[in-house]
Figure 1 (cartoon, rainbow, N blue to C red):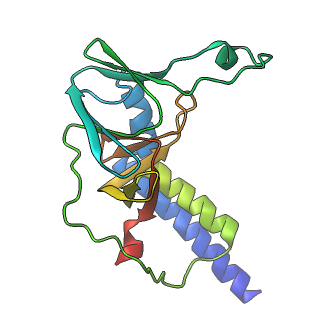
Figure 2: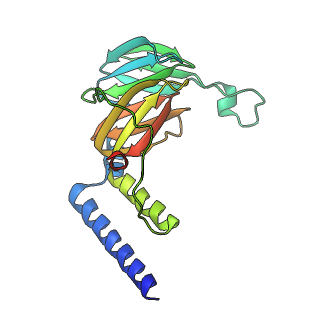
Figure 3: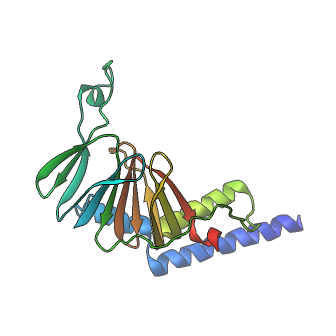
Amino acid sequence: MKTTRIKSSKLILTLIMIAIIISLTGCAAIRDKIKVMKGELVGVHFEITAYDHYANKILALNGKKVTVGLLENKANIDSSSTGYQSGVLEITINGKQMFQVGNTVIFAEDGLDMVEDFETPKDIAVDSGGGLVPIDRFINDIKNKIGKKKTIIISSQMGIPIAVYQGERVYVTVPDDLPKMTRLNIDGKSLYIHRANYLILDTEMMK
């Protein structure tokens, strides 16, 4: 009984601290929504880099006005269609058009730099801690919306390392309208990852 009360007290204290953090620092999820509402689908000005399965850079472009959308066919629009849905990305760069299928592509907004000379850890010993799994997941979900210190390790589809990014406040979303793509807001900058293997870890795990 006493143990239950202690756990409840810790949970209440944690929630209070989270509320205070949100009020003082703002919420990464809200800032991210505002950024998208401004029409900044992927960024104001950013670099697009395509890699093959072996992590070889095959193309690099950059532009001020970049948007990404799905080149839809009938199967994408009509649920009764027996055809295959299109997975083709239509990328518009300063008004010019490019279609993309199959390659790993990274969209990095200006000011978002890769971490140089990063050694990917092979073994990570995670300190013991935490409480009930549902509560841990709930707390982590709240922290994600606030923005957490995270390390992003991106590899090709063959598992060959490509890039590492880190941020103090990282918020992760999966766009509904873009297939095989993950969007991250890293300290206010946009990073899109398309068709890649990746790990997104709490940076504290690697200390």
